[in-house]
Length: 504
Image 1 (cartoon, one colour):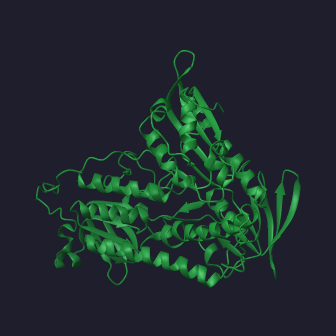
Image 2: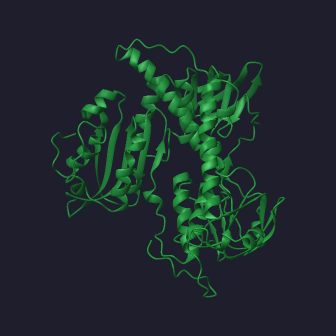
Image 3: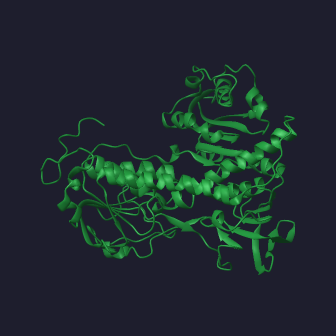
């Protein structure tokens, strides 16, 4: 980042850049003035606060619930902990059925499983709170609302009216989208926020929504032995991803015994003594689905209730998002008020790792430090189901819709030896620009799309390729270890570069 010792505030006064800035002073800890006020302590909020404090700014972070937000307490971290446990369960079945290892699964101790999950969450929670404290960020507990373009009122024991000299950052996150005909009760009808915290493991689950969240929960419950029906209103699962990704994913889920219904909608549901009886309209007619639990995963909506955006001159769009007037700075139509995370409209992806980058950007903008804008096209997208999916950049359809000439190579993951070892199918798909008068030359990589085991750990390489406008010939110069799954990525690029040992 360079030497920050000369960082100054607008008045020209030199400020301390030693991490906690002036906020370590006891008087400042009681002051209601700050350089930056962050509303919301989730991934976008606390990353903004930590970076701003590291740049010598006095930061107040207002949070009405738990630091870490949905990602840490109800979403990313607990769900991936549970999905890891599901992977272990699947491994026992694979060991027995494929490899001749006479392993058996006696039972899943739900209490022990959830205790491990909760311990992981607690450790992360304490870690984030410790980071904020050491950085000198003042955390104020309570509900915050805007009272002006530079002022915030926090209702709570340590609250009151706060003013921000440099700016305010809105990072209030999102909550599950609800269906009008369904009222979640946390037991029989659950949302993605409470699905993992409902009592015990159900014998059957009806999952509404075939996006990343719905697919992950369908996969988890199937691994744990439940009968699973997955219903998606669009024509395919993961409708925002490449069509080949959707096709390979659906094939993998069906192979595992999950009933997949696309182009299908819920037309009615009744809670019974044994669960839910639902009516689903499918292309083949209406079906009745009975399940012990109904899980609603039809998307998320921004949280802006109680913020009083109008007091600062802000409005939301039709989605409930707060659009930035300057996307390169994530600054709203009101100068000095910035927005990160789930409050941002598409094409910003509403993903936790994107909000980290957005928080860093906004903090650096407020500190006057040069920073590159966040490019939504280079944010990787991952679904942690079995099989996993991972992608970055444009789908083939998106590239063609933009009028781009493209060259595409699709390689089965089983084309490399490690893919055969795993035996879960999958694929690598590369979308690159076609250049030259006849489109014979291959230009920059536009998108990479993966399906298969552990592809969530393989997408980082492709993110760099897309972000740096690399060409297949560039990648073809680099050697991928053999035998690895990532070797399939190297092979796909070798073929596009005209150097492939095997033509696919």
